[in-house]
Image (tube, rainbow, N blue to C red):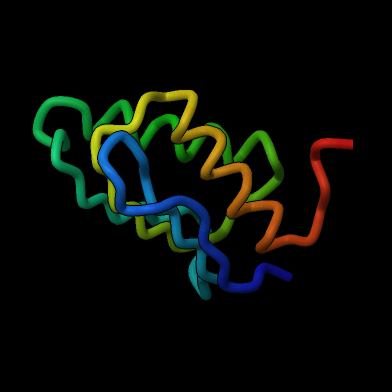
Length: 91
């Protein structure tokens, strides 16, 4: 069972990822980004791919991006997923 969690900050160059359980199947990504017009599809894709690789298939994702690189997006998404699921992927 997924519980509500978050990871990241609202600092420049970072992203805040908030995961919530979803009653509907699939991932729903709500992105607010300072660079969304240009990189929104890429950011959303990185979030979705990261969650699916961790076994998270059904969730609501609220992402507030302040120009984070892909590696930061993956790290924050992974941390939020670990907190939401209780599964430690770093062992």
